[in-house]
Length: 124
Image (cartoon, rainbow, N blue to C red; front, top):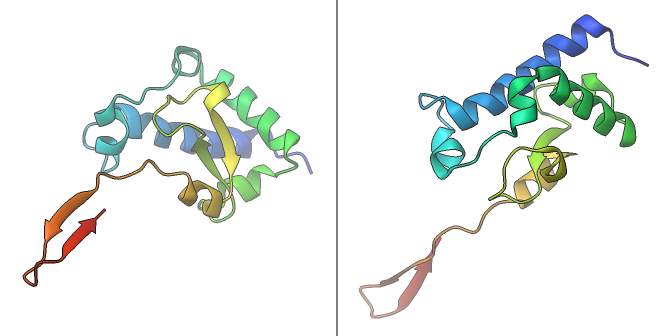
């Protein structure tokens, strides 16, 4: 079922706003993990939200995913960067399940400490 244009524009706009907030709004709670690390949105998507929408629609169609499933509170599918140190751009983004997205994380900094008993403990 093809989504209504109005619904698609509204729903894809919310995803776009979230992506932009993570990268450019310092008051966004997730900014430190995105924009604070230098993650950006490609210039084509910044200049034209419809370029993002065209990419999104092609991705959804290629993966046989409805816009409703993609935009249902991120319960079923999310926008994911393949390279977690890379930018939001067509060749580095995909539609993924929350499970796939949660496994695609950057490796945290490991910290080694000495316990009171003298054991070495590594923390993430």
